[in-house]
Amino acid sequence: MKTDNRHGLPITERDRMMRIWGRSMELVKEFQTFSEETDDPEMAEIFAEYAEDEGIHASWLREQIQRIGTGE
Image (cartoon, rainbow, N blue to C red; front, side, top):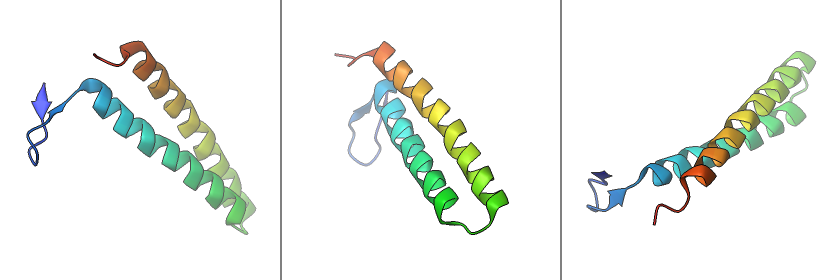
């Protein structure tokens, strides 16, 4: 297990997955917002597809986090 160099605290696989999952969820929201706010129909469709694809990634990450459990 590696540690956070700034604080010397252990970083678990679950911690890493939680961080990545949070970022993935943020991307879903951003792509959805971009899709709704653009005046370009082609870009709206592309951003909507990105949101959907990233949602699939976020869902997979959440499943892995649940599989790992709390790690305690």
